[in-house]
Length: 335
Length: 280
Image (cartoon, rainbow over all chains, first blue to last red; front, side, top):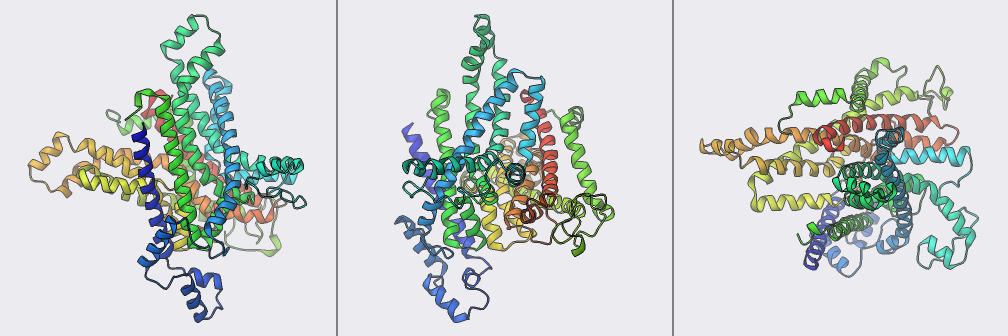
């Protein structure tokens, strides 16, 4: 098992290096000139030249690449052209908001998805089943950014029962930054008003982001449960006179869990993608919004940095799922 | 797939009400896309300051946007753009991925290893992020959206085609062709490619919904089509400026995206059911 994990970790480092190299070259071998874009069209050529020298952009591309690579090994991701701060600092600032949003979304997806999926499988062919299947396929077809706008339209603009975009209203000061996670920071500061407001602000973005996961988890739970429910040992358990709820939860659900975990893992990875859109709709100060702004202004250090981080999280959640999978299913262990 | 002919597939699809409705949605969308210039009540680009932000009415069924353009006409033209982009992406990614896959599977050894490791790296990217990076670097335009999304979409086809090629290259008829002196290139394209084609086409159908969503997402974020192009994602984004009073500006283009993706997902579900009857 240890050898397997080591092998996978080494492979992951290689993949991240690959992602870094690809984005590095995509971001530098580009027709658009980021320095000119940031200085504006009126900037004299000498100023652009001077700025390029300052950022080391006048050097040949391989020199830039080697410099960047050695920077990474020292934990330096370069400086953002747009925010003029080290990219690592930016990431540290924006990442926690995304983590909180993604976790909330995942919770919604897992609970709602598994619940709906189990009910749907148990009541297979009945109205509940049809409804939940329709919900799942419509959910998979809904663009997240549009769903977010609809929710805002209904619950914020029209009914006014949920707060609008952002994390806190403008009149509430943010609790002091200790962990960077607003949820934890407001608990540490005993700022219950901020906590309550933040959780209310979190509902719509988390639901928007979790919707897609809910749909796919519902589907896989349903089909996996249906398959298990047909097995002989389920019949045996029923014949033993076990209560139906025990049969479903203890005998069926446990054995249906493997594919569900795989899908949850896949969803975790794609939450990042959804975060980009959701954060844009809800003005959520997270990594997704940071990535969008950096990409739009071709802020290449920030682009490479965020792409690397996302590739890392993506591969890492895949690895975590594989390990969990091996742990839960001894048949595939050590292979 | 073996033993299942295309005719079987079509028969199964027509029997299943869900996939049949998916098919109907897609066929009507294609018709709308083709007929857009004839059935659109207005010119999708024509602005009319006197008619701006009109709510839905008999004159403008979906209302008008901030420049007084008729949203129904723009949504109809948007059908053309979305379907066209998705098809171009499928062709680009499908052809590239299939070629990489059959070469890797047929060659085996070092070439296979190298190509598959590159595929793995591309798979480590969240698709939208990769597309954003490429679209940002190339500059926002519809052509670049096709290139950008294809960059992330080809890997599925490569893996599929490779596994098919791996299986086929051991078959007797490939051996026979080689014995007759056929070149590697000839074997690849005459004997292996046709065998890999149907799984690739099926995967293409399954990928359509996701591709349309990604393309619309790029447009929404500002990396794709640019105003005044009547692209659905761009239109939804534009509507954010008129919330909440001009709710119709983003609602209808978004609905169009959803219906289109739904059509492809329903059809894809039907196909998946046929391939894997246990899911039924």
